[in-house]
Amino acid sequence: MNKIIVIIVLSALLTFALRATPYLLINKLDHMPAFLVKLIADLPLVVMSVLVVYCFKDALYVSPMKSLPAFVAGLVTVISYKLRHNTMLSIVLGTLLYMGILHIM
Image: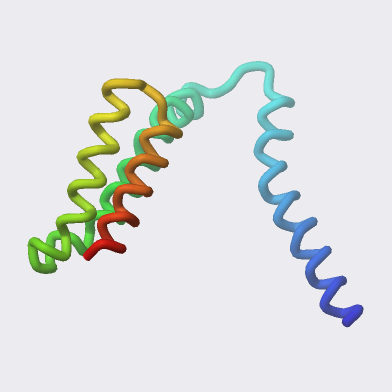
């Protein structure tokens, strides 16, 4: 039991250290390099694009009825974001709608 606790604590410390190191290194810089400024500006769009592609990757290869929940929920998510500009609301609405349609089907 003690070995498990030690492993969990070490894993948590290592994870924290790996995630905190970039912030500690950036704070020591007088100015950020141009490539880092561009990366920081473009990274959210790239991450969201990868997530969207991942979410819809299987929807294109199954029957239209099986892919309907994903496309309807995706459309509602986009429309709600365009209307309200609230990311959390859009994600929650899209997720609830997707799960609701799956439950009904």
